[in-house]
Image 1 (spheres, rainbow, N blue to C red):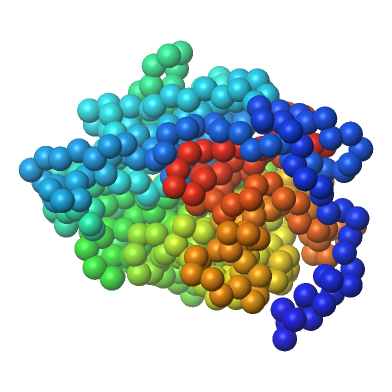
Image 2 (tube, one colour):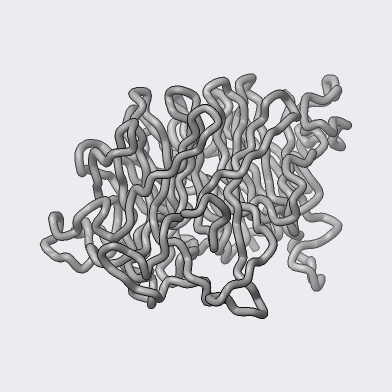
Length: 470
């Protein structure tokens, strides 16, 4: 009934904010759309490799130019530890930067121990230090069977049986050279659980570094988060996972380590399965992070949480929503010093797009359902441009679609919306069409001129982008 009423309201109140056809702007730069209102440039290809675009993460460099990091699946490689039928998927870590409007450069980060591809991928985050150099954090390093404290060989690719990397790693570029530092090898590398609750049960395990996040401070230090899944061998490894925070010096030395959330700490607010799909920002000099829960596996998306550091070993933790998400569709956090926090997320049970906002990160109102007609809200990405919040997402099909494909080939879209005059908690303007497809991942930033830039992994691979004007 809720969707039927919404459909009738939309039909009766179509707004003049609806965009026209996308302009001809194949280079992804500005278009010649005149006074037709907000328009999106014709989608252009950033990376034409068919395996590119896994775990998209976006930011801007110090000059306000967009940059993204992602994994690219390369040709399978066979060795004695691999399933000879399926092979071992190899993933290159890529950083792409826009050097001028519509022009991008890409480079492979020497991510593995040997300087090449990785087996597997569980998230990546990109940031720039105070010298303008890029840095990425990810799950890399050695395998769990070679862990210095907890040698264990059970952390493997589920399909092939190939051993996976199991450390939290940062790769930083200086000049033309990338260098890697292992930030954590084991469950007790960042924070000792025994120091907080008197038990060492969460100090055991060799598998860390999942869904890592990074953000730099003005003094050159950086803040990071990661998910610790201990031995990653059974259900309890994921439901008892820890979301951990580390503060590091400009030379990558650990300055502090704290527990953000776990199934054992803090007392009175236990968070089972914390730490998937993290989004990390720096707000007022302190880190703040949104995340989902993964109580059943490394990449679940259940509930939406937010945590903000208020002082040494002091965090506020808020369950923003109890909706069930979907693997690959994690919540997206955006922060503005003047406007506060916003999180866009998918209610997978209803197929709805929701946005929650908070001026201070301490008080969150009821999430606003932005779009509920049909199956929508896939892969949300949120960003602020001045006082305007934008949300990028995919629309799958209308309420009556019953085709064999998951999404309607005729009506599916990559969409974008901004709030109306009442702001994010009120009614939102009509959706704007960015592309005629449903991507497999999205990211969005605001460039130095205040324009929204959408980046996405097209179905089956390749990375595309589009820029909104004005």
